[in-house]
Amino acid sequence: MGRCLPIALLAWLPAMTADLKVDHATAAGRDLRAMERAIQAAGMPYEYGGPHANHATEMALISFPDGSYLELIAIQPQAEPAAVAATPWQKCMEGNAGPCAWAVRPMDLSAEAARLKAAAVPVTPPARNGRKRPDGVQLDWETAQVGAGNGNFFPFLIRDFTPRDRRAYPGGKPTTANFTGIAKVVLAVRDLDGAIARYERAYALPAPQKQDDSTFGAKLAWFPGTPVVLAAPASPQSWLTERLDRYGEMPCAFILGGGKVMRAAANWFGTPISWLASDTLGWRLGVEP
Image (cartoon, rainbow, N blue to C red; front, top):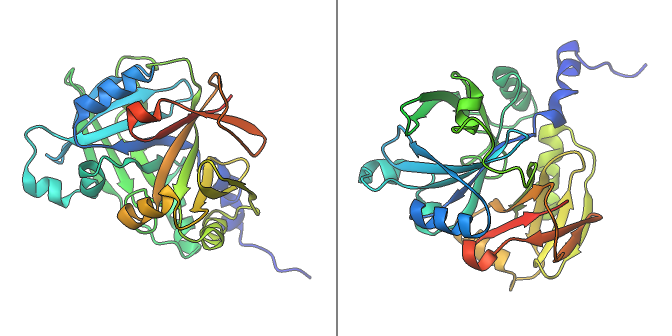
């Protein structure tokens, strides 16, 4: 007779893929005003979200109908130097790295943390954080880091104490309806097969689809039903090699869903992809139908 799985583990299985739905994705830079101008020039309306309570960073966001949002994070004008040095965003902000992290919002943060630990994936204890919006509304949440880093390779977990819509929609509605949301998070990795094995173990995922994109300079792997695309350098000369040497394994691009693909730059796993104003943004933001 086959070995039966514990009832508690069976209860987790249906939520494994669902818990990889993007809550938000983060792009970092030195100057938030410059980032706001660039994203607006790329046709993306934004809202200023306010400074974080860490005395180091401030943010703006582009929010979407599916509830996800793109966070632009930068150093506060009057930031405390020690606070900036203490933030995990420092290197990415000072280097204008663009994509640097992502988060998911599980139905039960404690249960998801326990499930990941059972899969031998480290998870930190939840840490309380928040910020005050420019209109004075206070936002409070907690986050737990998964694996190493700050939402770099694996997404960090987030749970709201104040109503989540207040965080995602400061103006009461999405900033744009031209896209449905953040459809894919493209992660730069050194070893494609090793990264695949880590995701399969953490989320009990089936084998991904693979393809090469010489224009993007990467060997790609995508787990269908999830936003996760792994991208390993196709050669030592790939731009991804330099990025990995500078920042390590983390997001290198985001792809928005539900958009109009005017001039497809690539076809990833049967879906056309175009890139939005990379010269203006300084980083890669894509669109798929």
